[in-house]
Image 1: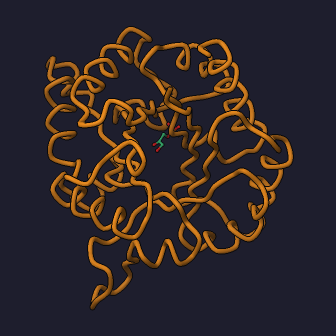
Image 2: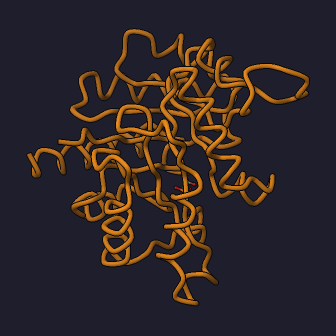
Image 3: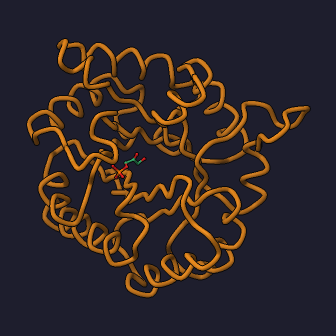
Amino acid sequence: MRRKLAAGNWKMHGLAADLAEATALARAHPAPTVDVLLCPPATLICRMVGALARTPVAVGAQDCHASVSGAHTGDISAAMLADAGACHVILGHSERRADHGETSAQVAAKATAAHAAGLVAIVCLGETEAQRDAGQTLAVVSEQLRQSLPESADAENTVIAYEPVWAIGTGRTPTLEQIAEVHDHLRGLLPDPAIRLLYGGSVKPANAADIFAIANVDGALVGGAALKAADFGAIVAALEAAEGGAG
Ligand code: 13P
């Protein structure tokens, strides 16, 4: 059975004072029955790892470079993230694909580097609204999956996050049927059927239970609602309830 995962992506949010939200989350969920992960900006990784020591909440990063080291001003390697205490890294988020022109081939190279450093790669994919309107959703995510996953991907070192671009930060989500359709489709394409599939895009306490009841949804990658311990904690609780129901 695939262990469920609630992952929070803080994006470019968070100063030292916000570590209190992470510690409040850990206090409220001292023994979660699902995996819980927070991915703060790189500047907070070390301090969050310290603040969450001896708690079950893991810490991840939001991107890495494909090389181990080198003349790449401003970039951070997977080995450096692991050295800082991160255990996961989000790769190929649509904001990086859009803002930095990241291609799926580059995402695969980064995932290879993440695996070599011992990090779990959370590989993101998802269609734009225009692609969905044109009926291209399954073709787009299939191609992104095929090109973004490296040879080394297995259920231990890789998680996939389906995040429709138009649902990110908008408060809009696909219908439950649409989420199920994409997740069922992706499950059939995975090189290892035990790889976990997260849904991301406007997951909130109010819609989490419905989304987590979908068979091939193994958790969520949460943006805005992961910034507050109360909201993310409610999503963790909904995922625990879904796991209880399934198990
Ligand atoms: P929101 O939950 O804010 O829509 O963001 C989703 C996301 O991009 C997580 O990576």
